[in-house]
Length: 411
Image (cartoon, rainbow, N blue to C red; front, side, top):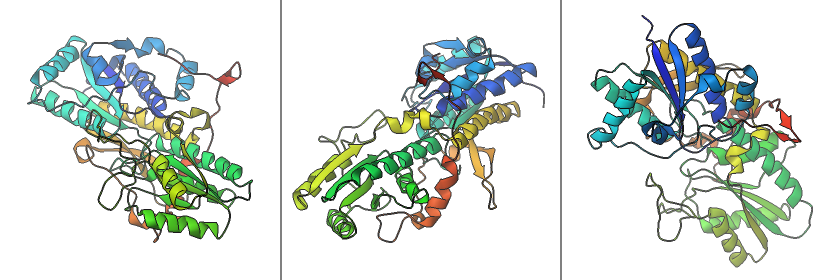
């Protein structure tokens, strides 16, 4: 295959993670190698995803990252260094003007490679842009690189960003467990974990059992209908074992009728039509206080779940870099309209390889926690789930510090 020569652009979209910049670093590393091969002349970064691209707010990343030290710091910097957005493109039939503008900017800057790092909605953008460029006879290779702490993308064993978030959640639960166990009075602590439609991140709350033998008493996921009466009965049963009960709940737990436990008043939605949740943990705190009358508190882990890079998983960061670099390799090989994947290889030792799959099979689908990962009572996880999770949080970064705090890079 002859080399397609031109410029490239990369953007970040959706919610940030502790590893999304590691993926960006991987794309930069791959593009630098492609420059040496005579394929990519300039790698641009679009600020704030597709919104920034439409504003032509582009930065030359080859100039910004002209040394290895900057790339290493980028890999350990949390959040989206290029900025993010939550814009979901309509179909090109419904919004011909926007697509025509995208094509104009592509041609103006001779962009032949388009890399988009994001979650489910971002993969939908990859799919639409790839199809549009092909229908307009513009040779453009569009590759999506997954990222989400929710771990809910199809076709990949797990997503970049999930392992680091899981490591933070597991560590935090282990620390909370130590704290709540110091008193002899009956008390319930409810910790709400991110996860609207899939409970993957909440399952990681169970990982402390592999490091010390103790974990939360109860874990509730969106994959099982939540029953308030059973929840209270579960807590009472836990009280027969010890006075301090620790509970993990996904923000997206639902009642049998499908309504969210933490649904906000008025049913407000975000730009993608997702119901905005006001706090399942807070709602359940009120239920426990009313039904049991014991001391109870709720904790929402909130943003640190996705930005705590000081405790990132080395496995996650390494795989994120490899996925980004692999996206460039795939594009150079002629692939377009694909999403990079992480494939777990068979065998006793944890090993993975980077692959890719048509993005059309991924966009707008949700991978949920399988039934055999949830215990029969629906209030915990199984050994199979722990075996799946355990390798993803292994290893720690060699973080560079400046005046006592982790060093970050700003683009």
